[in-house]
Amino acid sequence: MSFISLLWVLLLGSLLGLELIGKVPPTLHTPLMSGANAISGITMLAALTLIVKAEGNVPLLIIGSVSLGFALFNVVGGFFVTDRMLAMFSRKPSNKK
Amino acid sequence: MNLPVIIKFVIDLLAVLLLALGIKGLSKVKSARDANRLAAFAMSLSVLGLLSYYLGTSGIAIQSWIWIIIGSIIGSLFGAILAKKVPMTSMPETVALFNGCGGMSSLLVALGVAIFPISGGQENFDFFKSLINEFSISVSIFVGAITFTGSIVAMAKLQGWLSTPGWTQSKVRHFVNIVFAVASLIAFFDLINGNTSSIWLLVIVSSLLGIGVTLPIGGADMPVVISLLNSYSGIAAAAAGFVVDSQLLIVAGAMVGAAGLILTQVMCKGMNRSLVSVLFGGSLSAQTTASSGSGEYTNITSCSVEECALTLEAANKVIIVPGYGLAVAQAQHTLREVTKKLEQNGIEVVYAIHPVAGRMPGHMNVLLAEADVPYEQLKEMDVVNPDFPATDVVLVLGANDVVNPQAKNDSSSPLYGMPVLDVQEARTVFVIKRGMSAGYSGIKNDLFDLPNTSMVFGDAKKVLNDLIGELKDLGVGEK
Image: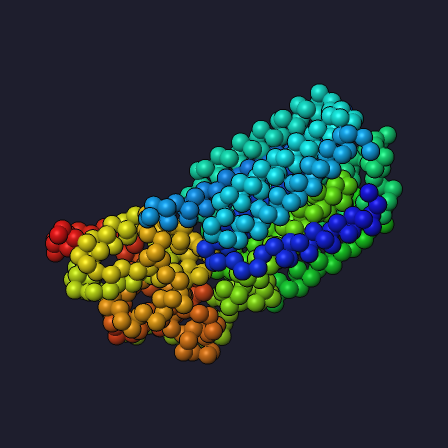
């Protein structure tokens, strides 16, 4: 992939992000923040790449592994916490009916 | 193109689509929970895609597998445990912690690539040869470091581990931060020029910049800052995507970065604050103590729980205004018991939810939902404000700034212009509070001085428990 096409990817990704969220009810601010935050843990893919390509370079393997750990902490924790918050909202209306 | 490349391409495309749908769905109450799961699924899909690609092309060495498994297990385990155990009240700081770790991850990837240029690797893995790679490494380190230290400071401040040091409220902080910023720019360009030793300078100075920018910000503005830092961690991820040449990473990072920015803007609007004043204005309290001493309270009426119970018993309509104090005291269940009793006596009970009550938007909704308060009884500010004049009793539970009439009446007040709940319009207002201390903003609350306001001093949970006892004695709720 040439640098230019990667820049296009960046541009289009940003535009998509700007368009995705329009109106957000205040109730959802925190869950949305936490969900988006979990997605930003996508750097785990970069950490994985680093480990796979380290080719026996132990310090690099360790850095990659630590990085992967941090990223997965972000991802797994983030999604669980978001789900916990959202579970509290969704339970209510169904209870009532 | 061979098969593994095609498979990875398809999976990446699918993952991007699902992630976009996930973010979109998260902004609607109905679809939010499914959307969150969809996003989680997309993330696991992307990992499978990447692993299958390497298995199909270069293969993955046993040694690599070992380190992958170690890192994944430890990270996921801690993440899952923390997510399960953390109390709902400390949600904002938890999100901040997760976010900081995401930034740290991007930082480490860039560091690893910068320190150990891989010899004889793949065609694209020829780092220090192109300017672009050095640029993306620098961005990744710079943004990653700021995200990490900024988030950790935000967490520590919300947890109460860190207070706001005095010097951060004076003009000195701008000077200090400008020094850090300039130093990181120098290190940044030095690094791009190929001087690899300046990488550590960049790491240190941008970490300090993250601390210096976050430290002066007051607690009430913290959710906005966390949201902004969340946007940064997306940018850091996108930069890391350039470092390892992954389109998926770039798209997802850019998406989160941009969406985070929008969310930050939305949150600022809800609090009637501009992003600039949040970032550079310092904490509200410091401004007030400097500008106007605002004076002492002159006309405080305090009353006993018994009087409060008697008034409640005679009421037809009661509005509850919950705030952070309720969350701290974990009194939501006790509150629910009180309101159940009132309802059994035919008293109409409604909860008035200010958009920024508590320490994060939606905080009160989560808390009251936990205590099984029916969704329909939670009224948003604009809906409930016209009801106050026809209300007999308002119970303010640990809320302060969001019921301060200064925001409407006193144009010199720093709160002026913030939308507030008009509780003073009600016939009687009871404020349950531990003491006369000021709220988040550190501003005197004129409500407490009004003749129709009575203070009930004490911990919210204890007062509510006493209230249950008193109501029982009065025979309320026993049909």
